[in-house]
Image (cartoon, rainbow, N blue to C red; front, side, top):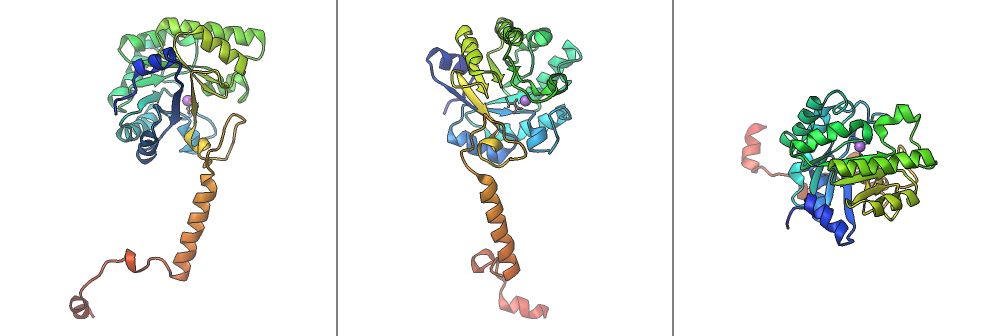
Length: 276
Ligand code: KIV
Ligand code: NA
């Protein structure tokens, strides 16, 4: 099947078709999600929490991102692979930002990059796009700003915040991003932004009027429960499945029922006898 691309994003919006996105951090999961037909795989810096057990995303490095991006790229045949730019990889200078975005493409195999923020990072976004790397924006609750926000809180509830998010969305579109992730904003605000923009919005905790949806895969499958945000729907409870299977495995080792006949390799008796 043909690759989902930047044009597919824009075409989907034009045709009123919703876009599906999930995070992925490794080869075998990426392959499964791709085979299930997801349009796009985000190698999110959420891997810091989900894969590496950090408290937030601020400790994630470019090398972490590239490592996981490469694995996901190998597993994704149809889905578009988006590499998330980690904290400090697009804040220092324009040159640095192009280099780091380029590394996600060149070393990580990503088709596009995502970065957080609005007017503050416009110059970096334009420079990355000029380097022929498609960019997806990210507004609302931008987790790399956690220390400025003072926690994971819904953004854009008051007029001042809401106005800034709308303005930033328009600025990002004008700068040339092909899509914008809206995280943890009120549904009505996400609706207004989605209607105002020509590019698709991808919501997470932003309601049903977005042009697409993204969730962290481990949240969606119910296998990461350190923190379950209100906007998460668990389509499975892999936590239970994994724990039950693991308990059974341990039990069978202890009682000697695993491995069984069908799991073993044989040696000729004559060969074995010579060793005794
Ligand atoms: O890192 C991530 O997983 C993300 C999504 C939640 C949008 O940025
Ligand atoms: Na992220």
